Length: 302
Image (cartoon, rainbow, N blue to C red; front, top):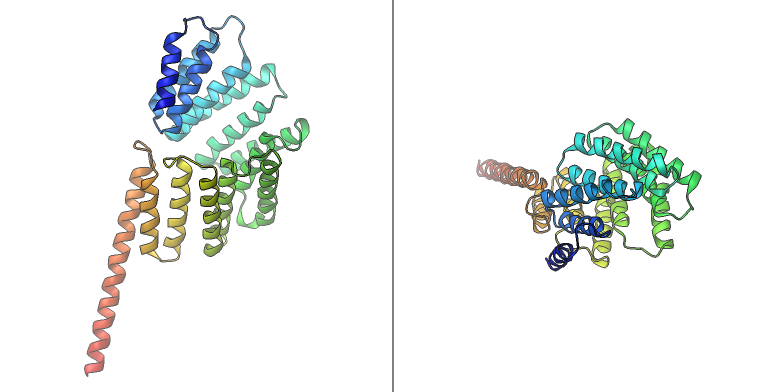
C-alpha cells in the first residue's frame, strides 16, 4: 500500500508532459500486478504504453516492456489469446529497431509461455529454443535472459529428456549464482519445475524434496507472503500427496496455498475443488476402513 500511494502521489505531482510519467505508471502497474490486482495493473500498463507511443522520440524498448507487462497480466487472467497477440506485437516492436537486444529473447520466451499455457507444447518449445539460440549467439554466457531461456526449455521437456532438463536446470542455477542472485524467483521456479519432472517419472519423494528446496529459497528471497510462487509450491506438493493417496496431507498443503493466495486469483476455485475432492476421498477411505473392520469383527465372532 505504501509503494502504491507513493507512486500515485508522484504521478499526480508531475506535469502531463513529464518524461518520467510513463515509467511511473509502469512501476505502479508492477505494484498492482504483484498484489494480484490485475485490472488495476492492466490499466496502468496500458496508460504507460499510450504515453510511450505518443512521445516525440519513441523508444522501442520502453514500448516493448509495457507490451510485455500487459501480456503478463493477461496471462495471469488466463486471457491466453490476448496475451499471445500482444507478446507477438512486443517481439515485432523490438526486432524492428534493436534485433540483438536481450529483450528479444524475453519476448520469444513470453510467446512460448502463452503457447505452453494453451497446451501447444510443440510450438512453445520452438519459441523457447529460438530464444536459447538467440542468447547463445548474441549474449554473454551469464546473461539473465540466457538463464530464463534454459529454464523455459527445461519446463517443457518430457521424462524421456530428463538428463537434458537436469543439465539446463544446472545452467540456470549457475548463472544466477554467478550474477549474485542465489535466491531469485527463477531459482525457485527451477526447483518447482524439477519437481514436476520427477512427478512425470513417478518419483514423488524426490519431487517433494524439490518443493522443500523451493520453500527454502522463498524464505531466503524473501518473497511476500501473498505471492503466486508460494501457491504454486503448495499446490504442487498437494498434488504429489494426492498421487500418493495421502489425501489428509494433500488437504493441509492446499490449505497452506490458500493462506498465500491473492483475493482475485483465478486459482481459488480450483483449490477449493481440490480440497472438496480430498475431503471426499478421506471420507471414502474412512468408510471403507470402518466396513472392513466391521466385517473382520463379524468374521472373528463366527
